[in-house]
Image (tube, rainbow, N blue to C red; front, side, top):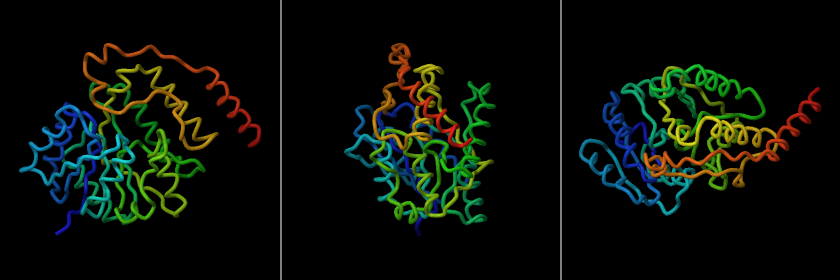
Length: 277
């Protein structure tokens, strides 16, 4: 019998963080799921830590020749049996009731795309109000011309995902937002799982600092709003758990802001306001 969920996790050097998520999956009260780890040829022990769960989880480890989150997710989706795809980042955390709550909502609402709300790690609980705002603003954006997602954590009906050709692998970043934008053209509106949450690891912000991280988010958002989807490398961005070793965290670079780029985007924003008024 085919599983209800296929959990797809793209990885690159995630030996430290991946076991925590796999343990969360092991504790799920709903057992009707499989796990597919799609790895971009890690150089650490990502494969070894995955195989330790072979006899206790329905899990499969797949090597992929591209180190690209969108490509790894798409490749994983083509190698699964489940009716619904659950995309999770390797450093995400979920509660034991996550899949059970999600399945109840899916069966009740009979939707095609579901987006769980995000919460920060406990040690960053003071930022919960920012996450609440981000969650609500993203949900509200579904009423606008430009729609946003809440990162790569989402649940999509497999046949529909394959029909629309999955994530756009040609984008530099924000492939999750573009997917939500594209599904709207099919007349599909995502449903938000307010009580089914994913805990977000803030390791990238911890490494780069809040200023640089929000600068990048500002550029990405402004680019999507006023220029279009992000195909070019508009700032430095790398994938891989190796970036967050303690020795690498100490080597975090100082922020270098491209003020000319910010100025161009700001001027574009002002022109948009003039047009609307």
